[in-house]
Length: 248
Image (cartoon, rainbow, N blue to C red; front, side):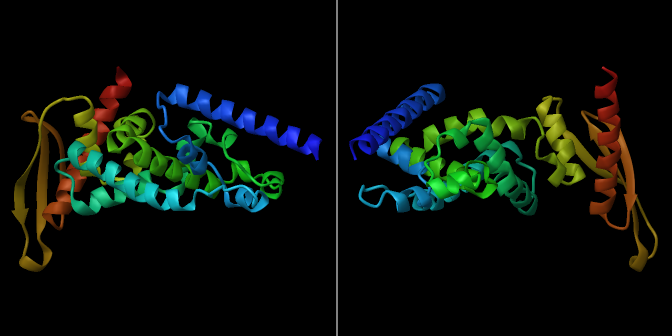
């Protein structure tokens, strides 16, 4: 029994040290360290330590999910003033989906901090995508409760927002949104769309659209609606701008 107690004591000391190091690396000092540990406590660990008052991270995960949606929504709302509600929703979904959260967790080495039961440990739980995604949400929930929304935003400014800024999620955006993002990233000026020509009978209209940047033509596209013509023009403009960037 003494040997087991000594082993448990060493394990606790090792975990405490890991969490202290992690806080120093993140530049966050939790007022309530129990919240931080709870964020990384899997239900399998709680089940194996029933005599001690451990809580798993599922409730924090629930809260963190909502906080993450809010903070990412706010960032996107400010960054893309011309983007439609549908496009914002699609982009946010790509940022807060499980594969993205897993990448954020891996970047922060969250796998090393998770408290797991022996069975879960033996079956590779530390690297399981769903578990890593849950831990990221739980951590955000814990930061929110302990430090408030501003600290949550400071965490996202290190881990999530830079990836949005460099276009890591632009594959889910339409051509107009991608063009807007590319131009905004370079602070190059204002994009404008204009209809050059409208022709054909009512049931088969054809539109030709031009997109320009600071009065310089970037692309021309045609389609059966204004929206389609603008998308085609934006596609041409993207190709042109990317060729310019590749040539530099």
